Amino acid sequence: MSWIGYDPLADEISKNDLKEISELFPTAGETISLMLANINNILFLLVFSIALMFKLFFRKNYNLAEYTSVGFYITGIYTLVKIITMFIGKYSTFDVEDIEFVILFLLLFHSSFSLLRKFNFWAVVKYVLVNLFSIVLYTFLEGYSSSR
Image 1 (tube, one colour):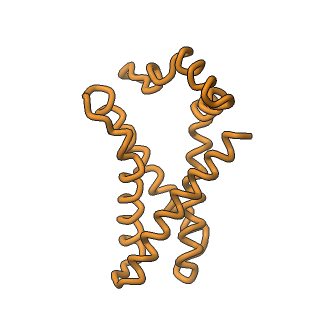
Image 2 (cartoon, rainbow, N blue to C red):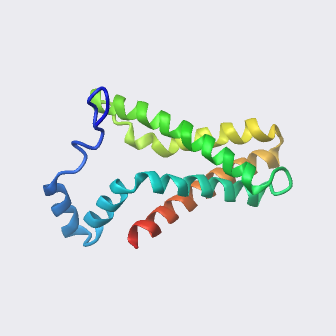
């Protein structure tokens, strides 16, 4: 619970929802419960997927530790934006869940451009590939870690 009494997960999943989801996907309820309990640890996967993709595509500019700090920066800003969108989604009729990865993609693209300051065709292609592969690797690692 917080100072203002806002719990974003209070109405997120009820026992009936877990039962209904578990009928469709046998391990889904267990997976969702695990993800909600370990959300802080799962965000580290985003940090390291961003760092690994930056190092893979821009290996000569910085080392892995510096790209990891960039990953922490991007994840922190993304978390703040996500908190704001959770408030918007909770207190309005606008559904912000659909634009979660768009926000992450735009944030990654802006951070990539701000960090490397290259703006030619191949640099933009690399920025887009870093963004896409970071998000894909994050979702893959997130799914793999929650299935264990």
